[in-house]
Length: 187
Image (cartoon, rainbow, N blue to C red; front, side):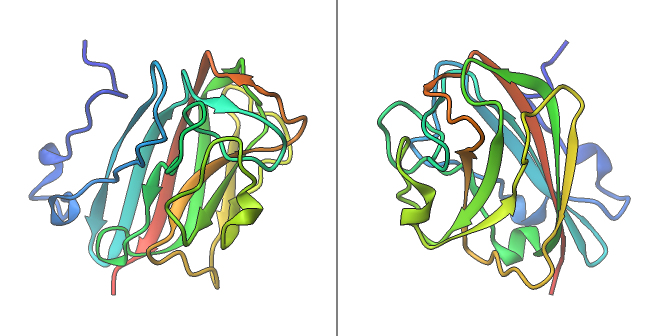
């Protein structure tokens, strides 16, 4: 059986008004890498609506102080994707679902978007030109789901970062899987 985090195939949906946009998928920065870190996903179109699904496995990434970027130990460019209007549409809603509770590293994880692609692990996200996308305000647990309305928040060309919050555990993740879904409108 193929692991869902290792393969995403939208070809079966073609002909039903759903296809992978422009043949492009999200790419992560060189610093979003650990011993078992996985980022897979893609964008689909339903008429003038774009839905971007990302599956993240945090295994091997590091967290540190509250407000610091999560990524490979001491690495820069720790973003897990970039919003592109032509691929993702203009996002108006984001949904995050915890598929496996984080362990080892900080379990209270937020998502931020920033202009810069150079954000480094163990560096404050506030040092970037950033905006909060999802603030968890609690430890993530299996099955937890959070939504955010992004109306009025321009994410065009911004890079997406995971940021430790809460207690700011300085450690390496041994578990933690998430599904991040952006709903956008194509122009």
